[in-house]
Image (cartoon, rainbow, N blue to C red; front, side, top):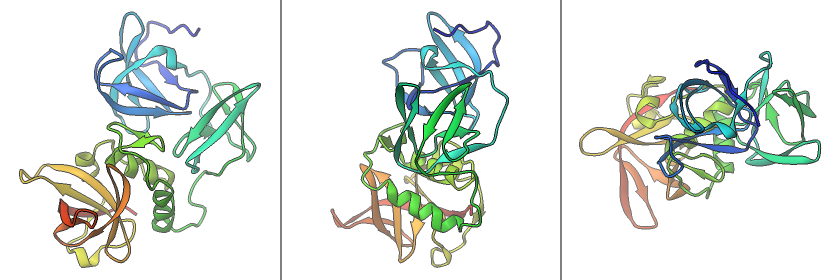
Length: 261
C-alpha cells in the first residue's frame, strides 16, 4: 500500500483505468467526474480514513477520491502521449488494465510507456500531438468512435459519458484542454454569429428557458450534431436546436456556437 505524506498540494497519479471523483468523501456520494489512467492531480485536503480532495491537473476540476486508487507522483515530467482508442489493454509484468480515450502515456515510445516508474506495454493508437492532422477532422473521427456509449453523469470514458465529458475527452486528444462542465466550456473559443456559418468541429451549447447552459455537442457537417443524451448519438441541428427524429421533436434549445479549433 502507498503511504501519503501529510503535505497538501502533493502530486498524485492513478494507474487504474477509470476512477470516480465524488462530490463528498463517501462511496455513496454523487460521481461528478473521473480520473483516467495516467492522469495526475494535486492533493488539496485530507479526511480520514482514506479520502482526499484533489484538483485534476488536466482541467482544474475538484472533488473527492479514495486515496487507495491513487499513488504519490514521483517521476519527472515527460512528454505524454494520449490514447485515441476507445478501450485498449496496457500490460505491466503479469498484470493488465485498460487505457481509455484520453488516457495519458508518459514517455511513450511506440511500444511502452513509463507510468510512475512502472513500464506498461501498449499496442494501440496514441498521439503526442496533431502531427499535421486537421483538428476538426480528428475531432469528428474520435467522436464517432464513441457512438452509442451510454450516458453517465460525471463520465469521461467509453464506459459512460456525459455531454461535457464527451467534448472534453475528444478535444483533449486534439490538444485542446476544455473545462469539465458545459457552462464553463462555453467560455472558450470564438463566437460563431450565425448557425449557417458553423463548421465541423464547432461546439454548440444549449440552454433551458432560464438561459443557463446545460448541454453541449460537437457540430458535424450537413446540419448534424453528435452529443451525449441517453447515449452518444447523432441528431439533426438547426438555428433553433437539436431535433430528435426518434421522437419527432426538439429536445435542446440552441444558445451559442463556439469555434475552438
